[in-house]
Image (tube, rainbow, N blue to C red):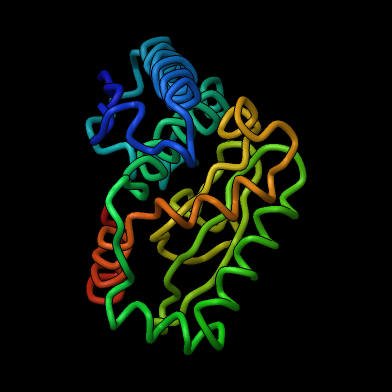
Length: 216
């Protein structure tokens, strides 16, 4: 089975000036493409492992993946899934959270501004490479969580302690921002709010609250 490199929904220069075109091109066409290639190679190396489900299902069931390729699937499959989710959560078009999502944010964090500060602090505090996530808990409230490397909430509690359905993620690997911001991760995080695709994040929230599952 082959998992594809999903195309971006916008041009590589569409996120400027927040994220420059060179960073987007290298990030998607090189880094993400490498994860796709290595994931497919790992799966091909174990022909007796027959799996025809989605990447979400593959990552949620890592314990069923042969030990010989489990780490490769975790790292590279996670890299593919996380990047797809990340890119689709960004947009050059200005948008705002839906009333329902904004209410949930205020109920969970006190205010939208406090949510942003809390999220940025979590992302800034993630040591080394990793991700910051906003997700929906079973009771409908929101939670901020971070994961190292290419781990994500969709991998389940055996891998990730988040215990939530993700609706937004931010990449804090250095390759996501270093060409433009160098070591200024805090500036990258602050500027990123200008290009969040709140329309899609709101749709993800409504899907998670209604169906208890991830919607990309």
